[in-house]
Length: 426
Ligand code: AMP
Image 1 (cartoon, rainbow, N blue to C red):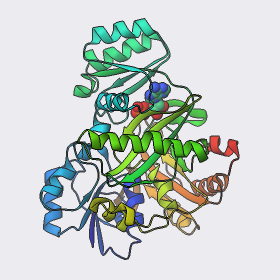
Image 2 (image 1 turned 90 degrees about the vertical axis):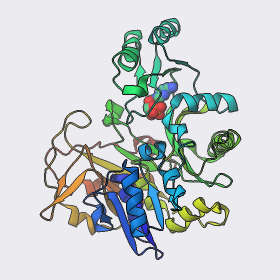
Image 3 (image 1 turned 180 degrees about the vertical axis):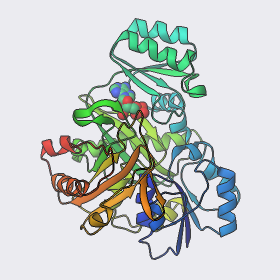
Image 4 (image 1 turned 30 degrees about the vertical axis):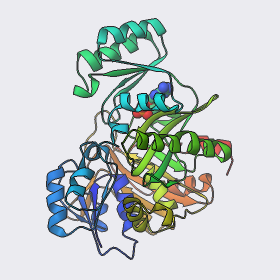
C-alpha cells in the first residue's frame, strides 16, 4: 500500500514512524514532512493546507490511504474533497470537524445534548460581551469562536484582562474572522487531561488517556505553548472516572453528532478539566494530539494501518487494537525563546547516540536537513519520547536521552509528568 500523511510536525512523525512498521505498507509520502520524517517517508513539498495540490498528488501517485494530522485541512474539507474522487482518507469530514472549527457550535451542541461543560454565553457584539463580563466578574475565560492555532483562549484573572481580551478579539481583530464571535465561559478549576477515541460513527474505541503540559516553564508557569510534553496514561482519570468520561462525554457526543446529521468518523479528542463536580469538556479537537500522539504511538502495540482502514470502512468493531501496558512520556525540546521569539537554523547533535537507546524514540517537529546535517527549524524542535513500566521510569529514560541532545538555546521543561509521578499510582 501507498500511504500519504499530511502534516510536518511531531504528531505526524509519530504517525509515520508507526505506519512504517506496518507490513501492509510499501511506500509512505509525507507532505510537507521534516528532517526526521524524511528517514521513514518520502517528503513532498506541498503545504498541509493545499487541499487541491494534495488531492492531485494522491491521484497521480495512486495513494491507497491518506491520514491527516492537523486541524486546518480537516476543517477546510480535505476529507470530503478526497472522498469525492474515491480516495480513502482518515479524518473527520468538514461537517464533523466543526466540533473543533467552531467553539460556539461545540458548546451549543454540548448544551443541547447534556455533555458536561462550563457555563457560557456567546456574543457577536463586543459591547454585549463586555457588559456580560462586567456582570459576572473575574475570573473568566474568553474564547474566539474559530481556529486560532491554539492562541484564541484567554484565561482572565482580572476584569481588565477580560475586557482587553474582548477588545483584542472583537475590535482589534487579532484572530481575524475567528474572533467575530466570542464565548465567555466560567473558569473551571481542577486537573486537565486528554481523552481520545477512534470511531467509525458506530463503534467507539477509546485510546489510553494522556496529559499534556501547555505552559512553557516548569511548575506550569509562563505563556501557553503548543505543548511542552505529554504522557500516557493520565492517572487523574483512571478506573470508574474513565468509564464515565467514555459514557457521558465521548459516546454522548458521537451520538449527538449522528443525531444532528454530522456523522463523526476519525478521531475525537476531548480536552477535559477534572473538577470536584466531575470531568467537564474544555474543548474538542477533530485530530490526534501533538504532543499526545508521541507517547500514544509508543504505547500502540497493534498495526495502525488496519485500524485506520477499519475506521474508514465502518468496520472498527472488527479491528484489533492493543496497547502496551505501562507508560510513555514525551519531553519537547524547543528553541530558546519559544513561544514568543526564537531563532532557527542551529545544528542538532547527539541524535545518533540516542538512537541506540532502547525504548526511546526522538520525534522531529521543527527540523530540516541541510547538507546532511539536521538543523532546528521551528519553535518546537524535537519530542524525545520513552516507554517504561511506570511514568517515573519513562520520565527518567526520556530525560536521560534529552541530556545527550544539544543545540544552541535548547529549552525544555524538567518536570514533564510531575503530577502523575506525585500521585505514585503506577
Ligand atoms: P481550549 O483550547 O478551549 O482547550 O483552551 C486552552 C486552555 O485554556 C485549556 O487547556 C485550559 O488550560 C484553559 N481553559 C479553557 N477553558 C477553560 C475554563 N473554562 N476554565 C479553566 N481553564 C480553561
